[in-house]
Image (cartoon, rainbow, N blue to C red):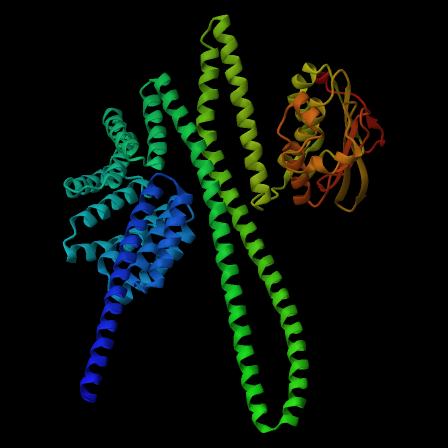
Length: 614
């Protein structure tokens, strides 16, 4: 009877265990299916440039993959994460994610996943113009696809080999050979994204060979696929390519329409990119903070468990000993808690500061990279717009057309000036500007600047005056280009805020010892003036005296910021003396090397102005 009862109990336990195991396997399969769907959705989000959505989907997939200990899906999540960073031009981050994926894929011998990771690595090195490393990884991918008889994978390898020869070596004919091989292998494969890429780069190759008809046909087919499948990045690049091809064939109106479509899409993609960067930074900060909190709680629990064991042991020894040790333990416990809290708070604050610093640096780098890319991309078509406008003005347009063309020319030149200012400021803040010294005539350099600004001053009915110390040598050694840039910004700023007034440019010798000479530069005007509260702020980026001044005079607020950064680079600083309504005086000091002796005569100030300025 007892044996029978034992058998029944054992059978019940086995049934319960089997049911639990079956339930666990079913849950794992459901989670696996969820992960695969998330990864598929993430790839679609990346192709449609929904970076914030893709980031959320990939982070969720990665956490779920780790929770069920699924190495293949963990590696695939990292691999697709690298695609997200690749599309955002963050190639170092993309390489880091690929290294994680490849490490897991090698360990579990996932040959297909490893081959696609090698293709992604090759694409990164193509962007970095590293032919040898790109070829190496594409060859590794081809070997594995060949063993698996994966025709689609081999077609993708041929496509990227063609891109390598087109972008790195500028060999369009050789690229077209690889594109033809890729097209043959991908013709029966349902992969619209790679198909659109193939057509786009075929068009680029034919563009270089001046086969504009074939190039347009391929580009329009690529655009149709990209628009149908919502591949936003490909739509943007293809609009721009079609614009270039139409311009080359003389279809300027259609080219302008395509270019406008490209600009409109670029604005929306910029907003999505900024949102994704912010989400990425916040997500990383949140995960780090959560991990730190969990670690602290775990340590605190371990410490409490040790304290409880000590208390139990002392209870066994004696009541008296318990009383004494309890008091001591309580005292130590409180002190340790106070110290632990203080240490935890300090560590938490340090961690938050480090995280905030890293996030700020990442955001700053992303901003600099984005501004550099966008401004360079905008500047090229703007040169075309202003150049074409200039040509049209020379072809005897009607008065009505001339008015519109002049308006277009002014707008193009203003926007080009703004882009150049942003580029200059970006280079200065990134420490990419160097001092280039050469021999020059300072007085002639300043006179040239004043002549260049003469028309702007006359438009404001303002007179320019130059006062140049005759005791300054004719030949100095310094950076004439940066001095011109500083003076153009300062004098231009004075012209903008001065009407029916005067502007004085003064250069005085402060000291001359051996071959070094210290000069003071002053730019004084009788314009609007600047209040005391605003005098520090106007040297910051995109800042002007007030909202009313900005509305009245316009401008971007970049000129004085560029002046401040240039003078800092040259070891000097800008000073300002001004009262609201009483004009302004900007001045700074610079050291030069005197290449010849000073003139033999006086130190009188030259109050005359070149004839062209009168």
